Amino acid sequence: MSDQDLIDLKKRRGIEPWRLRLAEWIESRRIQHFIVGVILFNALVLGLETDRGLMARHGHTLLFLDKLCLVIFCAEILSRFLVYRLAFWKSGWNLFDFAVVAIALVPGAGPWAVLRSLRVLRVMRLLTVVPALRRVVAAFLHSIPGLSGVMLLMAVFLYTSAVLATNLFGEKFPEWFGSMGGSLFSLFQILTLEGWADIARAVMEPYPWAPLFFVPFIIITTFTVLNLFIGIIVSAMQEMAIPPEPKKKARKK
Image 1: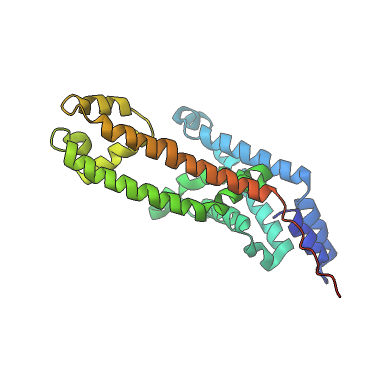
Image 2: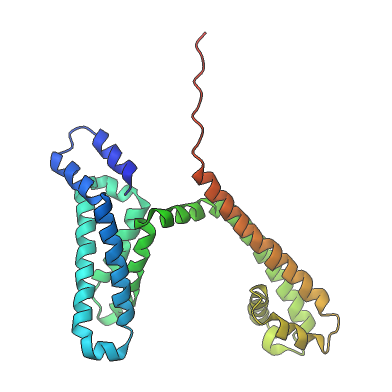
């Protein structure tokens, strides 16, 4: 929740005084900073649990601390639910918090054992607790409609380039361009500029004209399309940072 949700709760009539006091306590800076500290501490504990040596010596202590953090998270979510009631489920941030914590409550045995590894998702709660991170996520979600067009453009160009690369280079370089799947993976690697020079130089030996394919591909995908991604996200963040102008009331004649 946010300060605006607390303000909306105070405006409602018939709210029990204990709910208002609990809401103010939960939304206070002291409690929010405490929750951030617990999330960071839990992330450290989960990281230490990956060390087999530490688990052999201090496994019981680490598991106890992990369960203690989980109890704190459950108490926080339960408190929010008692305060906001049905309004709790109207917030996407609350739904995310509830899902992340609920995963840890699933029994870690049998077919559900794989979900135990998903406990690390509790660290992602920082995205909902820290306002700065929450604004970044909100801006990214706001930019998805614009990004979808860029992603479609990227997919069409990548597919076309993969077909062309398979036909041109697949015979002599089957490890990179022998199939559509291999070509798509190789071109995605070139798109990220990871080892693209090694691939390009190897292809240039039998095909001296290969730069006519690779250089335009890198310019279009890496320097143009990816910068469009960044531009759309930055534009969305600026739009959300600027408050909307109040509508002017029409003067009565």
